[in-house]
Amino acid sequence: MQEDGKFIKGAIIITIANIIVKILGAVYRIPLRGILGKEGMGLFMAVYPLYSMMLSVSTAGVPLAVSKLVSEKVALKNYAGARQVFRVSLILMLASGLLFTGVLMLAAPYYSANILKVSRTLFPLLAIAPSIAFYGVKSAFRGFFQGQQRMEPSALASILEQLVRVGTIFLLSSILVKQSLELGAAGAAFGAVTGAAAGLILLIIFYYRQKPEYNREISLSDQNVLFPTKTVIKQIFTLALPITIGSIVVPIVNMVDSTLILPRLQAGGFSENAALGMLGNFSGAAMALVGVPGILTIGLGTSLLPAVAKAYAQKQHAFIKKVSSLAIRVGQIIALPSAIGLFVLAEPISIFLFDISVARSLSLAAFAVIFITLNQITTPVLQGVGKTYLPVTHMLFGLLAKVGINYILTPIPSINILAPAAGTIVAFAIASFLNLRAIKKIVGSGFSILDTFVKPTLNSILMGICVYFIYPLFSKMGGALFSGTLAVGFAVFAAIGVGLVVYGFATTATGTITRSEIELIPGVGPKIGKILFRLKLLK
Image (cartoon, rainbow, N blue to C red; front, top):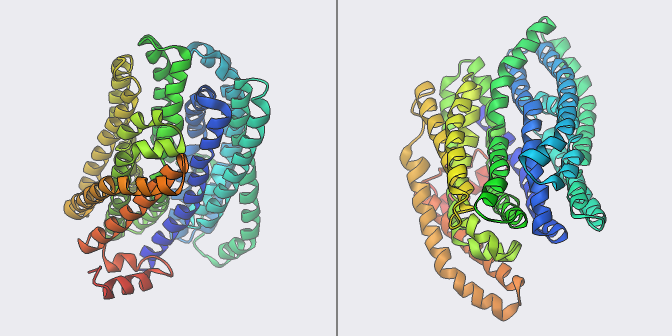
């Protein structure tokens, strides 16, 4: 129970931080779209996939690899070995961060002119490149803290990073857009640099504050073992390489979109400006909304890897089965209603936050939430038990399918931007189901199909039906109380509120989640469980 609670606590800390970060990340795009317009937003979003891929290649696998190695050594009370892993990774990440920053800056002119075929993306690419070096160093600190299952430093650093980033985006984009659209987009892109630098500074402060306490743990332990530096580097690379490849899946998917969408839309007869507008609607608006539910589930994945790795090192296979089953089920309990809700309310949400042109791609892309979440949670389970190459292999199959869908269907005028939305769904569906099959073989059949998938699906459909019929009533009320987008916003939030209540009652009434699981929530869990049990809403 203590380990369960520690895992849930870590997941909640990361989740709360991600709620704040993702809300800021989603909200800033609304006024930014007003500053830059559809075309400027298209320029801003067009550079992110290549940057994200370069960032992931240089950093993504390291925090997870370091987290896994540190958690295993901490489990064995080898605190000196854990710090050795951190120090070696710090040097590696500084070197790789500087290397990939340089590569991106050198490749930017060719990529913007010959791959994206939009030369105006050059300045945004150059502006965002230096952030990779800061993120490289930051990733080593994150892995060290998360390996100890200390999620607070990473959580607070992420919040500070996003606050500084968003502030920079608004300040520079509003000033530079007066000079040109591409400079405005470059100003927005530079926010990644200032944000990463701020987050890194905070993590360094946390590290030096913790250092005396960690030194005491080293001095008290008789299990400290140091290895040759070459051995540590090999351990990091052995884990980081497949994890990195797996972690760049989403950036690669986004890069496939930006690389193929613009030229394939133009091949279908759309002008450059029209193609940029469609990409801005899809990547900058629809997919931003699709990513919002992930703020509630990414904490599960982040906490899952060190928890599973530690249990695997201690041969606690029953715990691995239990915690992975719980994480997958909680993920679907969140993802399924989110997908149905975005689908049912696609048009009013688009009108309220952006404009109605976003609704078309959002209504289909909404269902990607289900499979992105499933992949997000199943991947760290496989990584934690040492099967780091499996998620990579599975996603490659999905990515191939997406490339085919994008290439063939995007130029068709009647389909156009719906093709990448469909491709994203197919890609993550293939990968996540292959992950599930592998987990069942390796860990065992630890989850119930009925409780994990069937019940949340039925509960979500019930919620969707209620929202569909009640939204028009709230729309009339909103029209009487407010005008314009405020009326739409009132109706959207009211309908979401009703949907949450309906879904909550359905979830507890059907036993989709139990009292013992709610009681795992630190602090308030036992009280909530007791109240719901007395109301006969929990078993």
